[in-house]
Amino acid sequence: MGPYVIRRLALSLPSLILVSFIIFSLLRILPGDVVMARIAESGYASPETLQRMREQLGLDRNFFVQYFDWAFHAVQGDFGRSLWTNDEVLPTLLGRMRVSAEIAVLAVLTAVTVAIPLGVVSAVKQNTRIDYAARFFSIMGLSVPDFFLATMLVLVLSKYVGWLPEFGWYSPLEHPLLNLQALIFPALIIGYRLAAVTARMTRSAMLEVMREDFVRTAHAKGLRARDVVIRHVLRNSLLPVVTIIGAQLTGLLGGLVVIEQIFSLPGLGRLTLDAVTHRDYTQVQGSVMVMATIFVMSNLAIDLTYVVLDPRIRYR
Amino acid sequence: MATTADRPFMLARQSRGPLLTAALRIVRNPVGGVFASIIAILVLCAITAPWVTAYDPIATSRATFVPPSWAHPFGTDNIGRDQFSRVIYGSRISLYVGLLAVSTGILGGTMLGLTSGFLGGKFDLIAQRFVDSILALPGLVLALTLVSVLGQGTTQVILAVAIVVVPSSSRVVRAAVLSVRQNVYLEAAHALGASQLRIMFRHVLPNVVAPILILISASLGGAILIEAGLSFLGLGTQPPTPSWGLMLSTSGRQYMETAPWLAIFPGIAISVTVLSFNMLGDVVRDVLDPRLRGSR
Image 1: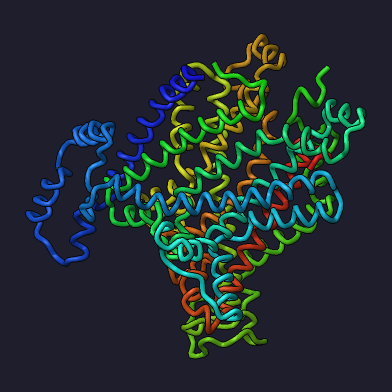
Image 2: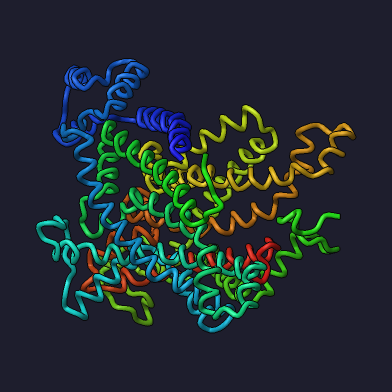
């Protein structure tokens, strides 16, 4: 499996380079730059001042010079300093990522515990009321926007229960209880959406496998229905389910912008949103590269879990 | 003899024509019928907005924070605008952005997937690497960056959502094209002297119509949600134009405690619209994809 992993990583390099180039040029097409954004806060500045600031930040150089200079340092793990806050890009990113990652992990846990049983029951009781109810629950999760759900939740809790969830971020090590209180609702809301996607996938994969010959054989040899479902059908249905959970998880890291905004959580999504509005090139480039790298890695991880789930799959 | 399993996306051939047959089956399906009617009503509301509403959606008045009543079914907001009018007019933005963004995006995705899958070779390799790298970014982050490049506003949002739709839809179309490419009728057309372009549009494209239709119906709900999300963040439709996402984020969340109707009605509007498109999308897929018939 070792050579396979190395080859996969090597193959993903061109994609990552392309990502960096696309985002680098995209940011520079922008009308206005970070210098203009800074001036907008402080008032008027003469053209000479603007020029001097650009020279200081290296923004007056040729596009390709800028790109290669950045790329040369980036491969060494140095993403430069934020043009807006002057903090180092990578440490900021990693700090913010903890928050998003924790929400994502909690959301996936919620989703899996709800979605897999739901999908299984829905498939086994196909076209019954239970199935219809489960499917409606899932499709609602895909349709109700997370910001509406969050707004309603806060409204109901504050107005009728008289209790508000914690806002902001607390370290899970120092304040485990506050941390959980602050993250439980974002995780539940995101988890619901994730559960919706996962339950639908589980159901359809189960239905497909249930028609296979080996399932009939398992029934024929007198296995209890429960064992057939869990040991034969579910096990063989898990591949697409794992794929979709993995894909969703990657989307989550940056896709939490809205929920982080509502619950004032300092996550990766909000960092990127702020960086984009401030034209903070280096910070956006850093965010995007980190997200793209995570995407590549998690795709590889998904493919490797296939080996565990299906012994017939071998990578060489 | 080709069975449906060989050509999974073939439309049922009948004298009525495949598209009409499919459309009839979608509407006659009980679930499809209900949600198709809801969408029809929404479209009708959007078109006839000036006639079904009694107030101008951006006209302010002194009647602020009026709770839902006969005069104002959805109440009024902090500067006295009628929420019912704003919600009805808001459907225009959502439907307009959704339909235009999805059709532009899928048109682009179809063209890219069709040429990529049909031509193969170097073009395919290079085009797919581009698709790979765009797919490596979460959709919302890409949309965010694009909106900041293009500027804020409705047209920009349409473009941004369209660009987000292109790569994934090109993948689906390309996969369908690859399975169609194996068919002997393409060889026959080639032997008869048909040009590549003719084969591509006359012989390949009609056989991948079904997955394209499934894509369109499945993407609409998502596109409307992205528009609402971007407007919620203040990057999409700009005030005072009524957009559901914007209504929820501005007056909705600010006065949530005292005037909850300002958040509830736009939220329900988004949810019902997206739900209808998602439900209809499921029915469209069941009808057009014979492999799944009866299984979902």
